[in-house]
Amino acid sequence: MAVDRFFAGAPWALPLFEAVRQAIGQAAGPGGSMTVQKTQIAFRIGPSEGCRPLQFAFVWLPLDPRQGGLRRIKGRPEPCLALSFGLGRPERDPRILSVSEPYPGRFTHHMLLAEPSQVDEQVRGWLREAADFAREKQRRGSRRKK
Image (tube, rainbow, N blue to C red; front, side):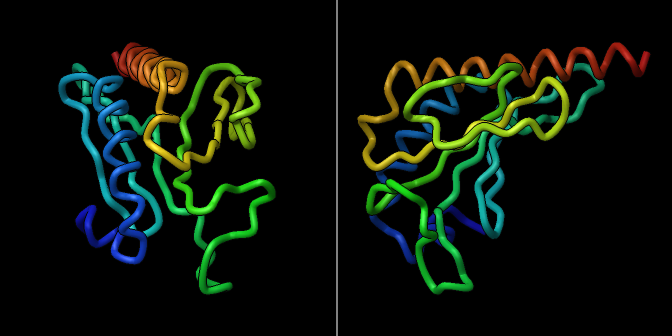
């Protein structure tokens, strides 16, 4: 699926997505990639020696197909784009909507963005940290395989 098709029902989100994509691309560095899926767009760091690419950030529209529209998220700006990323620690910040620990030592953070200017240096820093965290995980995985 192409990016324009993913955002077909939400053309307002394209400028916001481009700001996020640029920040994620800078964090991922050379070899970073993007996969457009049905419900999200996943970003990966490039593969290193003998390793597969690892996802470190995701963009999605807070939509609920069962309700035919936007999810009911308390305090959600209208309209908005969701950004999720993984860190090796929980980040406590008012802009972070929720943090979960899907497995020990990996914390998934979810935040909502309503305008491109919100992709500021703090968000760029979290994305760099998320990419570095994925690279370290990738390195540890490649050492185990040897």
